Image 1 (cartoon, helix red, strand yellow):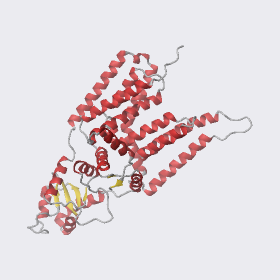
Image 2: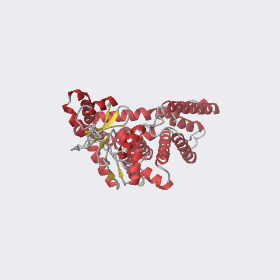
Image 3: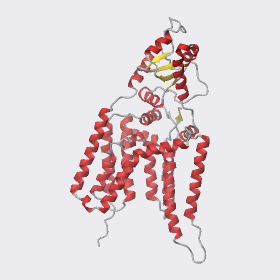
Image 4: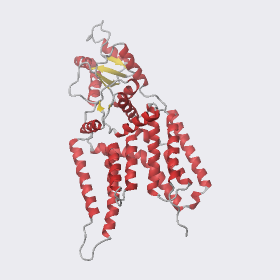
Amino acid sequence: MREPKPFSPIPFFFSILLLSLGYALFSYFRPFPTTETEWEFLANVKAATEEGGLISAREPLAFWFVVTWKKIFGSNYIPSFIALAGLFYSLFLHLFLLLLRNGEWKRNHYFVVYLAAFLPFSYGFPTSYFTETLCLVFLLLVFLTFRLEKMTDLLIFPTFTLLAFFSSFIMFYLGFTFFVIFTGIRGSRKAAQKTSVFYKKKNVPFLFLLGYLTFFLLSLLYFSYSDFFGEGSVSFLFKNWYETSLKILLPMLTIGIGHILLKTEKELNTITASIVLGIAILVSVYFIIKDLRTGAVEPWEIQTKNLTKSFGQALILKSDPIYLPKEFSYALYFQTGTKTKYNKETTVSEKSFLYVEGIWNQDIQLVQKSGLFRKANRSIGIVPLSEDDVLFQKITSDRIKSEKNLSFISKKVEDAWLAIPAKRPFDEYTAGLQKKFGYLSFY
């Protein structure tokens, strides 16, 4: 009986580079950015490069990687971000299959990884969840290198663990828990088989696992009690994990099922199966492109143009605080470099402007006709940004509160103020972390 061929690293690394290049080229020609986290990441990379700081409560390690990549290759923000996102996503998918199969990879193993990378529901994961992707890569390296048999292992394990921790605390909190459970169960089983004749040894791995799970539950209680992450914290965590899992579990399942089928069904290692997998990849890419063409809308373009125009017309001064939705705030900073607020402040200036939805042109005319403002006054503190989105100044909203016929407008403004999120303890944590990495915090 022939021994199985060992794993070859050269085609493995070549495949990582090939997939990352293909993903980057594909992403570069799709609508981008389109999600809040993509705008946020680009805005932070711009702030870190041009002003030495970050504008949102995010761990700084991921931004450091992109800024360094940008400096080395001299590329612009979007190409740098897409290229590095594609590289880490490719690395994650390859490492996950390597975790399942550390023997020889055949041609169709690589095809399964490529298929997982271009699934219609999950192709946007590495750019929308870049920090989580980075964290997952380091967590997989923890799984793959955890031996503690050599002196070098004592350096490798904590290094990858810390890198995962500094990439995304929320993802690390879940992923490292899986690692501890997996290694704890495996270690406790081995320890249970090594009982002594004279006395019963303590099952150290089981005790460690029990201690960690106790710590995990207590930390969940603390996060809930202190509202560490906001929105109830525990519900926020599980919602975040659920949304992340929806995107990444499908590629992982594709690789896992593909690994099992290639291991059990010899017919799937043929050239015919390779052709079928190649066609499946092309069909998947086709559906992605079709979906992108139907939903290709440039977000915040109209609002950004009108807001920029209002600065030129002196309807809004650069010194006036502006409260915007997070995504719009990130997009505006990335496109124009204008800093705005998206968290509640302890004191709000009367000159502050607030983004309010559902205010139409006829509503603005009602305010103008109310007699609360001078006819010669060019500005009444309401700046239209689109058909039904405006910037509403606080002094104007305070004036119209006494007018009964404008109560429906006051209600919309009041609801908009209440919807602004407050700062969380997690924001203070990330601000301290950013300071340690040499970045200022602009939030």
